[in-house]
Image: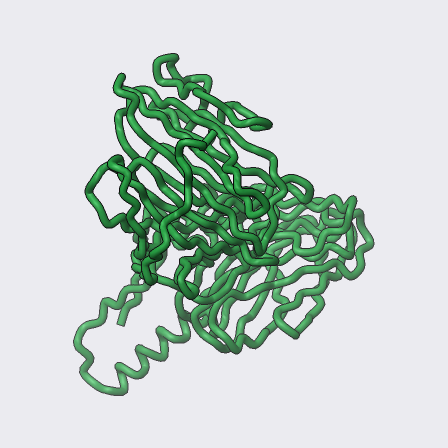
Amino acid sequence: MKIKLLADTFMGVALLVFQSCAETPVATEDTAAAQKNISALKNASVFSVPVAGNSFFTVKPSGASEVITSTNLGNWTNSATVISTYFRVSNTGTLNIGLKASVPSGTSVVKVTVGNTTKNITLTGSANTDYTVGDFSISTPGYVKVDLQGVSKTGGYFADVTDVTFSGSASTGTNIYSNDPSYYYWARRGPSCHLNYIVPTTDNVSYYYNEVTVPVGEDKIGSYFMANGFSAGYFGMQVNSATERRILFSVWSPFDTDDPNNIPPDHKIVLNKAGTGVTIGEFGNEGSGGQSYYKYNWSAGQTYKFLLKGEPDGTGKTDFTAWFLSPDTTTWKLIASWKRPQTSTYLKSFYSFVENFNPENGYQGRKAEFKNQWVRTSNDNWIAVSGAKFSVDNTYNAKQRIDAMGGTSGNAFFLQNGGFFNTTVAPGSQFSITAPTQTPDINFSTLP
């Protein structure tokens, strides 16, 4: 039996797969021997997990100088810093862990921890070298966390590390980690995931209504919980820093560019009106357009209401308006109203998503619950939403990282990502809840 190594692609990402080119065996013993050879070959495979796309500082003291660059872990001087590298295996068994590292001067001792097992490895020499740390037992398939921490050094810093390597019986199944440099940034952010609501009407829809609750402890810095997504933009709430949170409403320009300076005047998003205290500007990098945000210290465990309107103005343009309601008031807050040129449409593509926009915090998990979804047609009929379809982004689809899921919790939908959890939900899965019966109590004539 011959084993042929093939290059295949999945979503544009190169994958290596084994293909059997066996002829019909003439004896059972030959078949058994061939299978044994395949097993030996797989066990001998060593997988290299690039630090650049799969590692995080899970402990980093104030003032520590360590960095993760596009190629390695550098400036490693603080013995209290913990560098955690994650990859996913589908089998239990033994993992032989190693490092690809160099030490510019002197000799370093580094502690390597997997689960409850810790081993020390001595590193020396300025050439990038493959080091074997030792065997670790894996009792549960799923994501493996490998922690590095400096123990001692005689030189200026512990080491430059490019990869964590693994092999052994637990590695013989499907392994997942970021191996494409074009995805390193996105893999460290983590995969985003979406609920695409099933709107049970073909009538024109003027309003989307949604309620969002972020459970206590799930509001990590860098999180964006998007409530009312639509074909031309998105509306939700962010955790921007330890001291700042925002309600964000953005509308894409119909001109396709990541640089707002390139948008022609007749394709620019135009502000109709902004709410009091709302910051107005432009955005780029993920499409471009008009951006509005309101600094508001929303809290985990509280439920917030989002209302979005979209209607054509009769001149070939469409007005999109967003309002926000917190539980401590009965008055809706206007975020902004934007006019989108080259567009004549009612609301399309009602969806929610959860994402992390801070790659340094991509190892942390976040979750949001979405409930009481309604649409209101242009002839003023409220219609409840009771179904949603789960989808994921290219980072997940390219199998660079798959810790993202959706589902239902009681009468709410939920989305969860980050944290390297092991439960998987197939993209394309459909969820359903009992349709809400009490329409939103909104006096449209008094909306600001």
